[in-house]
Image (cartoon, rainbow, N blue to C red; front, top):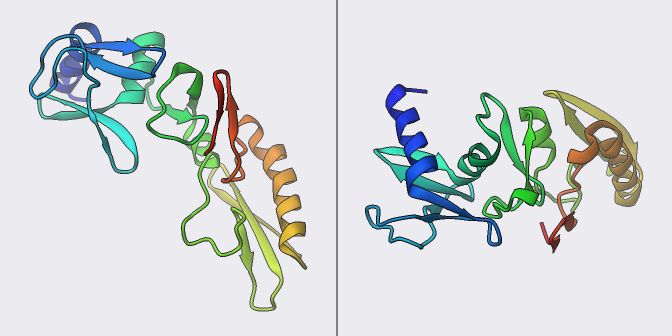
Length: 180
C-alpha cells in the first residue's frame, strides 16, 4: 500500500470517522466533502459493500472498522458471518483466509438445483462439488436433489467448519437472526 494511501486511511480511522456499534455504521465526525457530521460515511458499491472515499482512494468500511478495533489485517480478509456485506456490526465480522471467506458465499443466481454446489448431470442424476483451499472436491452421483443436499451439508460441515454456508439459510449472530 502506498504511503499516501496509508496516511489517508490513518486519518479516516483517527480523525474523521466514529463507529456506531449499535448500527454497525461509520459516521463522519465532522463535515467532509459531501458528508456531514453525524451522517453515515460512504455508499454501497459493487459487490454490495460500503466504500468510503478520501484523497482519491476508496476504503471498505468493514476493513476500517476491523482495524479501528483490532489493528492491521495484512493480507487477511474480513468475512461477514451472515453474508450481508452492509452489515458491519462487530458481531457479524470475523477474520478469514481467502479460502474461508469463499466458503461463506451465497447461492448463485444462475443455480438451477436450489442447492449450492449441486449440479445436474446429462444422465439426470446430480453431482456435488465443494471447494477447499482452491481445490475442487466432487462426489456423487445422487439420484435426488435431497440426497445430494444432505451429502453436501455433511461434507461442508466437515471441511468448512464455522464457515460452512448452504447459501440459503439464516445465520445466527449474537444480536439475532438475519436472513442471508
